[in-house]
Amino acid sequence: MLFNLEADTGDRIVCYVVPDGFQGVPRIRVCNAGEELAVLAANETRESLVVASRHETGQCGFSIDASLVPNLPSLNQLELYDEETGILIYRRRAPHMAARKILRLETHLFPLWRLDDALKPSFQYHARGVESLGRETVTQLFLLINVDSVYVSGRILYKNYAYFVESSFQTAILLQEPYQELAERLLVLSKLRRIGAEILGARESMEVEAALEFAEQFPTEDDKAMKRALRQMPGDVGMVFANPLTRLLTATTPDEMPTGGAIAAALDALSSFAVVGLRHESDKFIGALAELIGVEPATLPAPHQFPGVARLAEILKTSGEVDHLLEKDLELYHHVSQAAEKVK
Image (tube, rainbow, N blue to C red; front, side, top):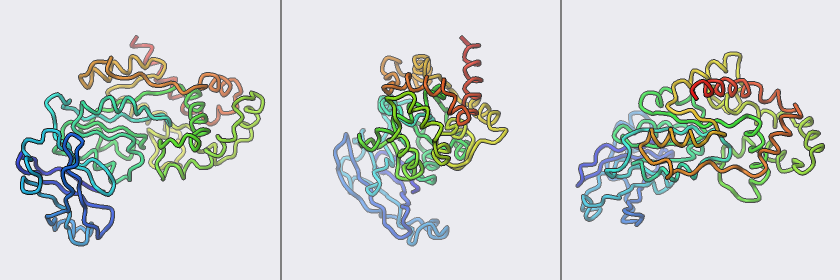
């Protein structure tokens, strides 16, 4: 899906929404302070969409004025949402909102959504968990040219979006020690279907199905049984758990494995980020992120520690059974930790 704001003059808003369906006529929900005011169908044609074979009729434009939405100029908390997907299209900016564009590149399977939600009031446009969106839509989030206050978070393959991100965004990332991250992923997946958490999109759920089944049967209460299960881990499960951080920073497809130059490429990407933090020093990460955005650190929640991670991580580390799966991530984390020590 494509969308963008073209103008907001107070008494008139012009934007477009191009749906994934070639023939559909998009509709947007107009809200103010959480109250739905209207549902409007596209009322303008964009001939360029027809020429580009992106839409059959080009009827994807919106021109909204007071005849459609009464008191439009005075609606200071106005928001526009795509009716079909619920995606935020546009939100009017309040004076206190940060004039920055931030990407928080998610590295955890159990996302830091509490942190993202705490930052929502500070940004005009806010989207979290964007890995569940298609590549076209995620790219569009980095191309909102008439909005200069944007916060995006997601577990996206950075290399696919680096060109767009580095032109106008500042990136923040929090890294977890690789054994602890694997332990957290095993524990989260083991409970995912039971607790009904919606931390995975439909596409990602399919990609990790084998790992999810493995984690559900993983004997977390028996150390010997755990080590035996790790030794017998199927190859397709191992591919899901292998070097998630290095792949996040250097791969272009979910199943791409790191090459010989992956560590250098990952470090190069990290060197361009505005904030790089370590999970065990999350207070420093929170402080640096708060300073970057211009909010008080006390208003931001510390990352939640998933129960049982420390114990399982120690078993993973001492067993040596998963070292080959985390080889690149362990090396990358070592380099980042050393750099962090030097700046203390």
